[in-house]
Length: 371
Image (tube, rainbow, N blue to C red; front, side, top):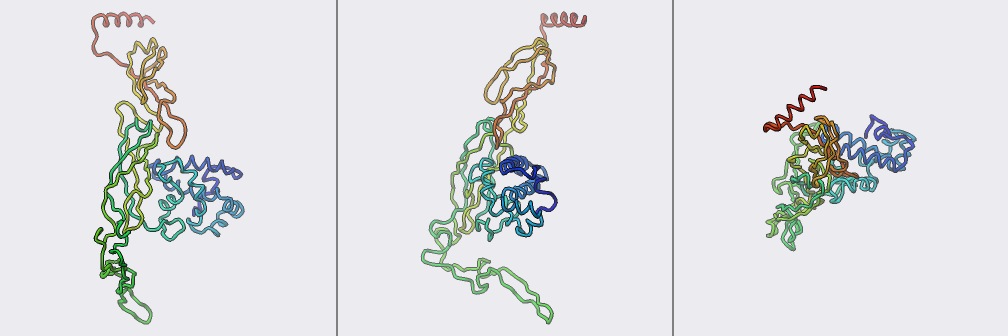
């Protein structure tokens, strides 16, 4: 439990803030510090801190106890991280329902497992499950603008349909290893005296640390409890997603010894664009334009991610001036609205001139020098 800062201070709210205000502030901070979005070194710790504060202040009973007795009062009744987060599932699921993949959402269980360690026996635990898998996929800025649906094929360990993961042939069951009594490990007393006993623990070689022995293995999976199968997985990548974001596909990974499947995490890699540079939900375009158009002013066509549009160049515009095309950027991920496109003006200096152009420029230079 955090003991360094006041929970209200952590979220930057006043003590009489209502539930909606607390929710709004936490959602904003979660978007800012979620490790999938923020790669700074302190982002994970900050995300832990604000999540713990929200778990307390979003629960009326916990908040009342905290307001009356402070951190000591909370730690007296909720001594572990599990205690703090228990009962807050609905509050977090509502916050995160539109953040991340949309495949089962990102909720308090993921917060608990990611930052405080999975506890299979806890109320948050989902039992043993297969290993999580990370898969990288590349998309373009145009995909980011509109969102895109993808399909991938993964070969993965899937629970055997014949034995349902038991690893045993039909009509048979595994028997408890008589050497380790089902523990998967064997204890050996090395020496014993009046004052001390030395014990070593080693894996059981008889059952290969499984605790059971299978006399008649399933022929379909050769006693593994799983088979290797290709599976096509379709998923949606939401508009506005950022480079490095992870999308979760619940239960789409492999099975572990016949147990439920792990999760598939899709890591988003955004390809560099040929003409645009991205900054969060904004994009930058470099426009080369003749100095005559800058001096006289003009209206030109410039590219956007959604086709060409008109841009007015004011008379006397200087090089390196940045003009804005409002709303021509990318959707704001996990929020509303769109960013802008910024156009940086660069003077295009001709490298070759014909005789007439040279003559006109000399005349212009002569007139301009007069002031």
